[in-house]
Length: 393
Ligand SMILES: Cc1cc2nc3c(=O)[nH]c(=O)nc-3n(C[C@H](O)[C@H](O)[C@H](O)COP(=O)(O)O)c2cc1C
Image (cartoon, rainbow, N blue to C red; front, side, top):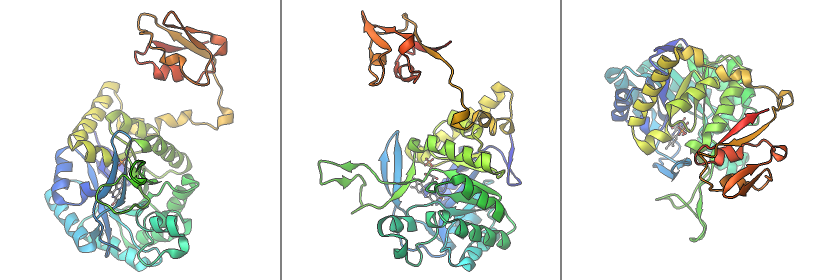
C-alpha cells in the first residue's frame, strides 16, 4: 500500500537509517531485497574531519551507543548514490553535514547529491559524535574547523534556519532536517525548519549518551577496541518512548511530515510511531543486532495489520494525537486491580511495590484493598501470568 512523503511516493513507510547499514551498495541491495522502501545513505562530508572506525557499545535489548565511526567523503557518497540508482528502485535520502559557517559547502554537497540522483537531501543536524562530543567535554569555544555540523548545528535555531534556506535555494529535490533531540524544545526547532522551507523532519533517537563502565576494571567504559570514550549517539529500545514524545511534539506544533525512529524493532512499534504522528519510520540498531530479516517482518507485519483492520497508512498517521492534552486537563478515572485466581500463581510480585499497601499476600494469593489503591498499575505490569486487570469504578 503506497503512501506519500514530501511529494514522493513510497511503497511502504520503512526507511533504513543512515549508518553502516547504508554505507555500501551490497547493503542497499539487501535493504531492497528485504522490503525497505528507502534508505538514508551513510553520513557524507565533503571531506570528513577525521577517519574513524565503527566502534559501538551494545547493551542488547536496551541500547546501542556509537561514538566513533567511518563516514563517507563526497566522492564515495556520490558513487554510492549513483550505483544505488542504477541497481535498486530504492528512494534515496542523502545524509550530509558540513560546517555551518560555510553555506557554500552545504550547497555544494546538496547539488552534487541531487546530480548523482538522490531523491531527498537529509541535512544531518543530529550526530552528537561530530562537534557535540567536543562541545560536551571542552565547551563551545573549543570547537575547531570541521567540528560544526551534526548536533552542534541542530542545537542552534539560527544555524538550522541558515542551512535549510541554503539547501532549499540550492536544489529542487525535497530537503529534510534530521534533528538532534538534545534541545530544550523540539517543537520549536521543527517550526524553525518549517519556516525556513524544509519539506520534512526526521526525529530518530541519537541522544548524546555514555556507555556502562566496568566497575571492576578501573571504571573502563564498555567499548571494544577503543582507548577511551566520547559522548555518542543513542539507539535501540532506550530511545523508543522519547521518540514518541519528540514525534508527537513535532506533529502538534507543525504541519511538516515526519520520519520517526529510535528503538523500532517490531511492526507494532512502527505502527505506534505512525499513530504518534510519523509518516515514515526508520530503523538502524535492530537491523544491526538481528539482521535484515527484521525488515521483512516489519513490512509484512504492518501490511497485515492494515489489511486486517481495513485501514490505510494514511488513516493511522497521528491517530493517537487526539489523546494528548495538558496534564491539568487530564481527568483521572477511579478504579483498582482485580485478580483472576485461576490465573494467579501466587508469586507475590504484585505485593512488592515499595509505595503500595493495597495488596497483601494471604494464603499465597493477593488480597486487594480497593480504598488504598493509588492507581499506578504497576502490579498489573509486574504480573507474569496476566492475572490482574484494572477494574474501572
Ligand atoms: C553505528 C551507527 C552509525 C550511525 N551513523 C549515522 C549517520 O551516519 N548519520 C545519521 O544521521 N545517523 C546515524 N546513526 C543514527 C541512526 O541513523 C538512528 O537515527 C539512531 O541509531 C536511532 O535509531 P535506532 O534506535 O533504530 O538505532 C547511526 C547509528 C549507529 C548505531
